[in-house]
Image: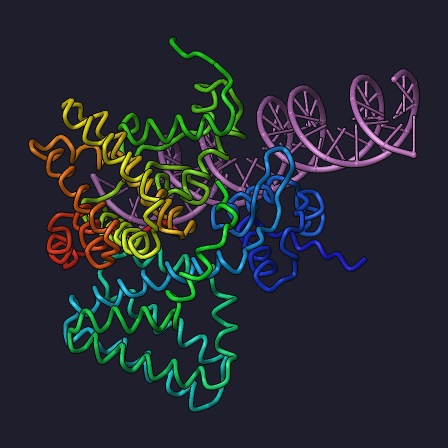
Length: 224
Length: 224
DNA sequence: GTCAAATCGATCGTATACAATTAACCGGAT
DNA sequence: ATCCGGTTAATTGTATACGATCGATTTGAC
């Protein structure tokens, strides 16, 4: 048996489970047994339970009453819906950033853009992915709405695995970079509509049309 | 001692605490003692703990490590931010509903509107508040994005207490009703921009200008 | 052979017990 | 008198024990 027992704490357990679910270590729909996980992490059921409950709040895990915790399966349609909302929130951060940002505050955003350019030139998709996250984070900081930023971060995290996939598409990195440049230009110019539109499209290309299509199909409800 | 012990379950405890926090039964910043609450509800610490953790996820409670749970204090600025996001989400539901709704599906929305009209004519703000919630719920159903609907419901719940307050402003019910009519008209006409704008303004009147103002002040971060 | 009901097993939900961490209090030295 | 360190008390975080609930299996009758 290879089971090490490093005695992790609740927070670490939460992160470990989240990581493993996002990377596919647990199959969607799979049951997450409390005592099995407890044995695996070298702790009792209690911290595992609390970690699972936190994951329920993030939407990764579904909790059936008196039945246990299961890895939530996200349908394609649901993913589209989440991207649709993400696009809206990101667009909003752009609009607010464009309206509220002063010239002097642009340094961080421009630095993040340059970092993206370097990663793209290096042809390193993983590095670009990291810098991309920091780029959007820079916009969050500029939007002046910390609550909005928190919600955007939440969804960003939730969609992490899927966003990463999209970068594997051939010319996608270059295209993304070009969009980043237009976004910065719009924010710098105070072009609220431009920043909003660019950012929205940046998240879902043809997303709304696609959304219209799948919205006509019936689909599962979100967990309580 | 008036302490009854009805032995509530976790879900009930969660709702009771949520209700009491929203209605001001617990002061903002007040500490929520686990065993005290356990005694009060006639249960042990365990279900209280789980209820508190769920409230952390909703943003009502803040959890300091090894220190305990506290009622989260929401500053005015934070409230404005939340309304700003709420306005955007509602606007989005309106836009999607206007684009995706067929004539035959409008019955429910129109019924909800008529119910609002009846409550307004009766001069009953509380009844109007209820019907208002159902009206927005009807739009959620039409937007075809269940995930978005879930997020909107979450924020709606979170802002419940404050929305209720706004309806006490003199002519506010009549004004709200007029906005509802314009919203329905826009959705029925398939006017995406109109529905989005009307709904957005419906949530925050002059909200953006106010947001611009308070965004220039420093403010607390959202809890982890 | 099929279906239904009751028993059995397993797991979740809750209660209680223990350990670890923190904050407050107190005493002493500068 | 003030500041610093150690000690203590209280509370969170975790472990374990118990009870309740649900699903599956088995047995019996039709």
